[in-house]
Length: 142
Ligand SMILES: CC(C)(COP(=O)(O)OP(=O)(O)OC[C@H]1O[C@@H](n2cnc3c(N)ncnc32)[C@H](O)[C@@H]1OP(=O)(O)O)[C@@H](O)C(=O)NCCC(=O)NCCS
Image (cartoon, rainbow, N blue to C red; front, side, top):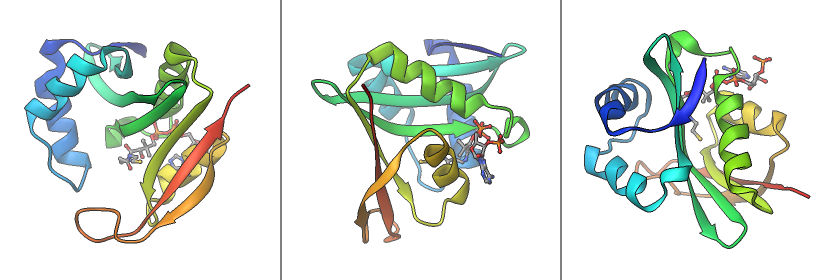
């Protein structure tokens, strides 16, 4: 498995992964726009030439990194890909704080982030477009 920056030719595979995996819908322009403003925050995990996962993160403020999206293909899960993406995107920005939002019912993601030292800092009722509640989670680095 190789983690590298997103390239334009990854777009179709990223879109397929998003459509298969996430409940909310996004357009290709959303990803291209994020890539333009935050190229360092858009990393893909490549496995045998295919995109097995990606992370999208952006500096929300000086020293504050926000993880916007993280996704691993179902047949590649529990092999450390999300962990590696999280570590690499954090290392690329050297932030003081990393934060994100996660749906309350998303046990896999909650466990993943807890395992990486994130703690819940806020409960977010009605946070998602479908009205479901979330948590804000945060990790402070040295
Ligand atoms: C959440 C997600 C990104 C995890 O990706 P992954 O590559 O499987 O994660 P990792 O292999 O790095 O897992 C690291 C640790 O997280 C925890 N974890 C991951 N998936 C889990 C699950 N389904 N149930 C419980 N714990 C889980 C475990 O502690 C795991 O360590 P272990 O495998 O040694 O027990 C993946 O399930 C996914 O893409 N889900 C759909 C999209 C999503 O929910 N994204 C996050 C939105 S905030």
